[in-house]
Amino acid sequence: TQLLEQSPQFLSIQEGENLTVYCNSSSVFSSLQWYRQEPGEGPVLLVTVVTGGEVKKLKRLTFQFGDARKDSSLHITAAQPGDTGLYLCAGVETGGFKTIFGAGTRLFVKA
Amino acid sequence: GAGVSQSPSNKVTEKGKDVELRCDPISGHTALYWYRQSLGQGLEFLIYFQGNSAPDKSGLPSDRFSAERTGGSVSTLTIQRTQQEDSAVYLCASSLLPTGTRLGGRNGYTFGSGTRLTVV
Figure 1 (cartoon, chains in turn orange, brown):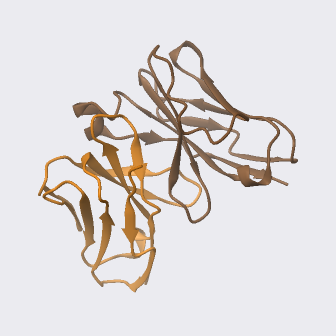
Figure 2 (cartoon, each protein chain N blue to C red):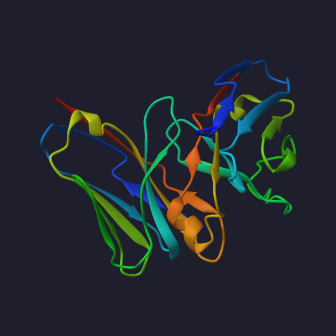
């Protein structure tokens, strides 16, 4: 069974600080996605990374896929209260269709 | 519709009763997935439908759980004889292509807002 471990599980920071969330696995994924979920809503796709070593930027968010396609990170620069939410990484199993989700990182950004 | 629609948004039921949860995917999306999200947990895969192919039911936790997808569109997840451990948010998602395909993997899922099931 493929597993994705996210860390930290919970993060509370002040507005303006930087942070990094990690997503690790011993398995190789064909692609990896990051979602953000707000209370009472379903997860919303932020980005998909496909190539080992790939880096994608979405405004203040930087996503990186590990060279071996087993891990990923999400870095947020100058966090804002609007960034508050549950961040989920999800790996698409190689050669299959299932997407395996991590348990999530709950981020709270204080004004 | 514009998004994935799930109903009801909240359901409280007595232990032992049956419940039906509905998912209306985005029109034209061939793949449909059900996930379960318990408090503090990640999303647990339940079942996957792709076109007219037989569904992958490998994630269903027990034979009390079943799902069907009629006409390649609307899906219903049924839980019989509900137990307290069934309490969770049930999320439905659809994608234009299966995520195992090159393009499908890039596009990811579109999720509904979920049904919060509470078994008392």
